[in-house]
Length: 289
Image (cartoon, rainbow, N blue to C red):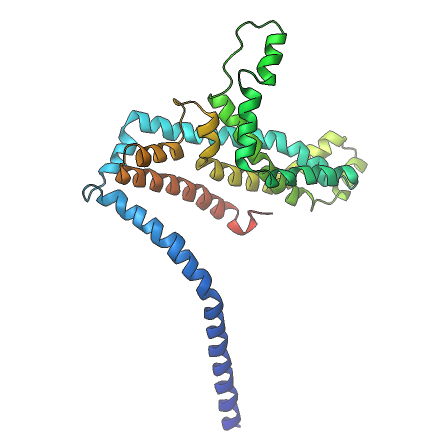
């Protein structure tokens, strides 16, 4: 019996070793990919931020003590917050209608949302440049109402936030849709059968149960907006630059690699803090519903 037990234990150990070898073999390409294209570059940027031009934390001190850079940080977070709120306000009704209906209109709306991902980022951004330009339809409509000097719409914080909202709206809608689609309609019927009005049932039951989608979409949109570059640089004004634009300016114009690296680390740290709070409260595994 002892010999048989020992043979079984030995066989199990050998099988365990083979399973571990297979696991390592399957994970090795992914680990190597992340190491070469993510960990090492981020590590080099971090090293550059504290060694260029000398070994110190002067670059980070410059970020948090210079008013103009603090203004850029504030503006970046403010725009990301505004875009998150706008996408939530616009996306919640659309996601609600799409998730609660089970007909052709629901499929059409969902297809239109998905269609946005098939249109290039540059195409959508340049479209807003045409729409909000001096010869565009918006300015033409304003002039048609008798306004001799229409306001400047293009190259402002307004146009930048509007373009970012258009681009980020599908992310919010899909995050909300993935949660709302799981909702059981019988909950609302039960509440109405107990005397609740449709609005009360919606406010007291549907809205709380959809909050995970609200949180998921908000975190997703906010973190992406923190690093937005193309849309703000094409639609925004020179005085309202965001952190990603400042990093590009330091690299391409000032050749100040150390300070650009410090700004990059600050942006990475801000994103990590947002995701860390979300992971602590909700869990990153629930980010997509």
